[in-house]
Image (cartoon, rainbow, N blue to C red):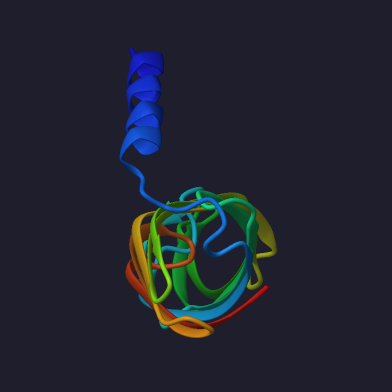
Length: 170
């Protein structure tokens, strides 16, 4: 059943996407901030972090497919239940994730895309690694060389709204 759904989704992406093959072939560098962030899906999650920040690089390989890397930092505002005694600590988290972006619509000053990222995170206060992930089904950029960016999604990078400013070059 999962394979059938995957084939249908891939077919829909290829049939309904209207990005042109050579429109935005190039590099995007973006600085982002989110309203809230979930810093780990791996720990016994107890809290939210305010104003996580990230830097993202994406190379738009074709009109549809882009790939790159994200470095994300969540400040010292996260509570995790750690150990057997349920002790709570405040930690800061850093994560690095490869990212893949599919562009649905690409115009000179507007882009609509979806993004998925999976990587590794590090919790500083408790010295543990965790799985880091970000899924943003809707992402929008406005502008040509310097652009604004908004994403709706969930994961290590941001929850539910991610916003930023970026620079695009060839």
